[in-house]
Image (cartoon, rainbow, N blue to C red; front, side):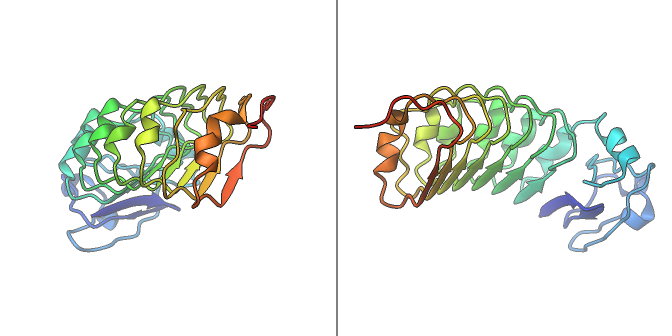
Amino acid sequence: KCLVCTEGRLLCEVCLNEPERVAAETLVLGGGVAEATVSDEYLVTGLSFFANVEDEVFQRKAAQFDLPTTLDSLVELKELNVSHCGFRSLPAGIGALTALHTLDVRHSRLQTLPAEIGGLCSLLALRVAHCGLAVLPDVFGSFTVMTSLEVQGNHLASLPGSIVALEKLRTLDVSSNQLYSFPAGFAPPAIEVVDVSHNRLRKLSDFEALLAVPALRQFVASHNQIAEFPV
């Protein structure tokens, strides 16, 4: 129920759709865990899942592909980590993964997120840092239980207004983007840490509601163009 590709190993607890087309040493049967060293020929079909490895040849191979459309069949998947894999898009069917609580696509080549991610009603953590994103879909009102949002290191000039609906949010990192302003009224009652550093923000008055939240213990706004401060 958890697919994690990291450090050259495939760790999963689901059956592959087409095990006969996968090298025997990489075969994972239901409930089992296998570890496999990735080679140039390593290609998991069925799930078409590429590992996060340091092998440069394999990374170039993986960068030519996207996640499979069959991903939507993993309806009980809880965590999906494909960080540093170079994927260029997420299939629209990802919205069917209603049990997913963690989606980690950091350091990929996404550029856009499908609006269908709004279907991830159980999502607790969304990690899309350093993906080249210029815009986020305005679907954050669907993430009623989200506690962590990481979108640092992208090219965002603004954030969707629906971000103010993240009532359960505890940590927000939007640093190193190109933000000129921040959605007014953003003040989740449980928010603890907010990082808006290294942007183009000009006034802190956008954060008056946020700065009044008792739970807030860290607010970072350095390396901006602040010219207006709240009275």
